[in-house]
Length: 308
Ligand code: ING
Ligand code: ZN
Picture 1 (cartoon, rainbow, N blue to C red):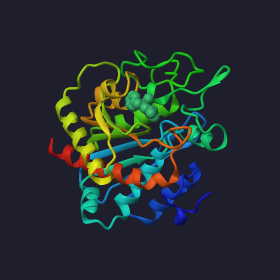
Picture 2: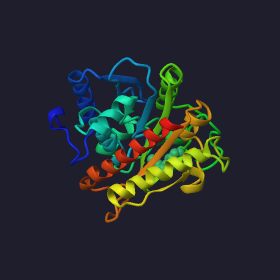
Picture 3: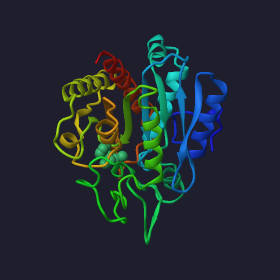
């Protein structure tokens, strides 16, 4: 494990190192508060931070990452975002950090993430037990047009939607957390981090139905993708889930937008490996450039959100 003082973006860190780093950050920075969202299926805390530079009633950005265990670049990027918001010397980043309150949860599927280090590197779901198979795809378990498309009813499949909508501990905990804060803390922006595909997507996934602010989200998505191109030359596609990647129901941001009415909701598909036998196994050398481009485009999203 890595000590908090040695935490970096040159390698992928296990669950306990990430959590130790979050705890240390909260102890050493007055604007950082450790937040325990609740317990996973196996009883682990889902830890994150709230970053709030003072008590003004700002709008809030919520960032969810690591809902899929094997997508290691997502927690690595989430911790990079936290580090930048707290430690950057760039005045533009400091202004952005202070313009919002932030909730950032690097590993929303801690049981699965742990299992990818000690069991199966390619595990995606949580670790709930169903007879001879394990795991619900938490990004198919949210209660908004649950299970209508792009999900499986078989617990042995990688995209099992669960025995019922919001059946899973991790899903329930996130729903309760957001429900209790969406109005009182003015959560206006919801971001989910995944890999791989180089995409920036907005709802919906369950059908071709267009969200009420389709035009705004289309424009913001295009500006965010352009930002990435300016920063690194990488091409990210943008558009709705349904039109851009594949039909799939029960994703967290479909629920966040459709049910909770959070207006600005995006999910990233970060970089995948070009030169590996598996696209999820992104070389640690790519953590920094991936996180840099994602954070630059997140700044665009938050700035644009503020204008609409
Ligand atoms: N992709 C996402 C998945 O859950 C997605 C795409 C995002 C679908 C949001 C629905 C909602 O399949 C990966 N790589 O996990
Ligand atoms: Zn994913």
